[in-house]
Length: 209
Image (cartoon, rainbow, N blue to C red; front, side, top):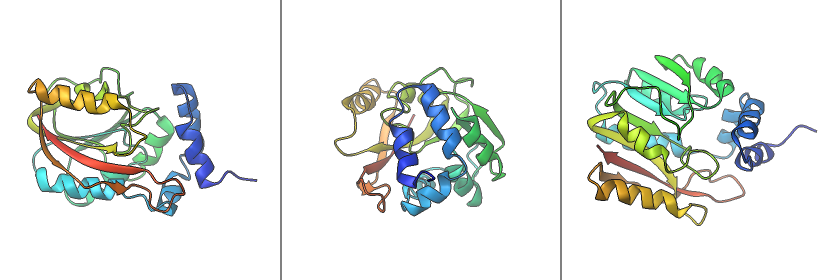
């Protein structure tokens, strides 16, 4: 019997290393968007709506970090943002993102490693649904900050329930204490996948370099 949407989601979040994650996403890529639609997935639309308050459509290139199948990039492109560069660990997911014709380029990169971009390249970074235990750790934030121009925006989702690890909040506070970014806005907490059986609560945050 084929796996259910919940089983595919569980397999991704129970992966313990990159090899398991890559295998899980390769198996999920074709069903990813239909499964998330079934869960009522809200993170991309809320993140893009919040980003549009703080990023101008003509500000310059945008990095979609952990772009998956391109849900965020396609929405950003639809309302006039670009050029957009997408990066993701999974080449299977990047293949799905390419079908949307929303990206200037799509590159395989791992969040948490040094990214293959110069300093101060992007007007903004979007990182939605990726900064979470088992995926991109808090160490990814400083590297995302590095590639954003001074005055640029970093828009990211983060769990706001007991599933979040304290290191994320500690890293955010450390970067602010060091004067490397400042808080602009955060959404209220909301269920990112309200139709999924396990309620996971998120906030979307906007910071400026």
